[in-house]
Length: 455
Ligand code: IFM
Image (tube, rainbow, N blue to C red; front, top):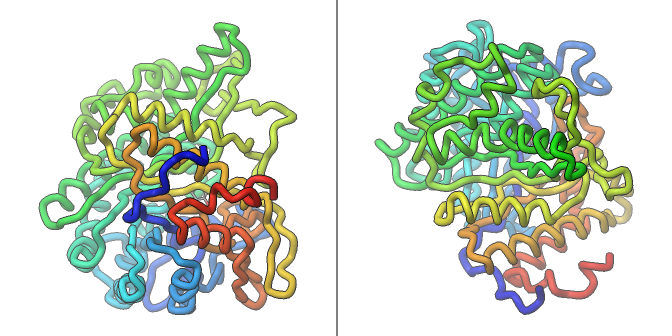
């Protein structure tokens, strides 16, 4: 590996966050509530009753946080916009104060030569739209495109990189099938409707973007390669089904304009017969693909085949993060190989990669998170090898800049390269942040230094 060329000089080295997970002050300055605000405020949904009311207080500490990004040598920052700060009712009246926050953020980034990568939707649908069915409403793609156009008009002159939707699979699966995310539905018939409306939303927003703005627009998919637990044909078939459900449910419409046929079999009568016709416009809608990679799944056949039962079974002995997710950098290599095969010329960004660990407490301004340094180093070496093998990889965004609100787990899972003391809001860069700064500064050569492997 050490013989590999360094990363290109224009490689985008960044960190990622999302609005509800870091901003706090969710109702400030005329913002409307989001479904996550309501979900977190409903007892029993989030561990310990945690909410995003304060989070990392980024809404009020934005300037300090941008200065921190510069200190860490970041060249890019991926953030999301809270739809209900911009449109408190989800549509109609635009709230200038909400827009103002993101204008100031973008200007602060540009002043420091940090490239903004803006995600339009990272799970915080305006609650006002949920009253009309949210993503189940056939008008939701138009609501989304109208919202996107407000941002294209306001920020299109300064933001050149856009993501429509973060992890549509998680939106439909966790929000409408499993019920562990907002809006908390458990309904086999709703998940396919949401999938269709999210793809339509993406396609409409991309069309609006291309009509008005220069720059590039894509989507961020959570890609999790699926491997059979054994070579028994039942396990192999189960892994293929789950591959269709988790990865190809969005990749196929975007690349081919149709859903994988396995989904109609998996969902049975819950799968709309006209699904393919309704998402045909998604084909060709990507200027780039964002890859969110954390882990793989090892799949064993289960007697029932409805999607939520096809549970992954990682080997008991495998190293894991605090999320219980297996650490498996080879899975990222396999994602790249698959994409080289399926979409050889498509520009790629790793829009999320990182790990939660039970870090030691911050002491004397230091947090020794060797496990995260190893995790990042191992995945970055895979990214470098993918470049050498011909993947058009243009950037890498570590998840996450800050410890933050990890959805149903509240503040109990720390993904940040910067430690946040939630009582004082003090930020302390962890060892991984300084390691990442050295990687950026050296165009990846720091990955070859002996210390990063054996930490
Ligand atoms: O925190 C989340 C993020 O919001 C979406 N991708 C996965 C991360 C870790 O679970």
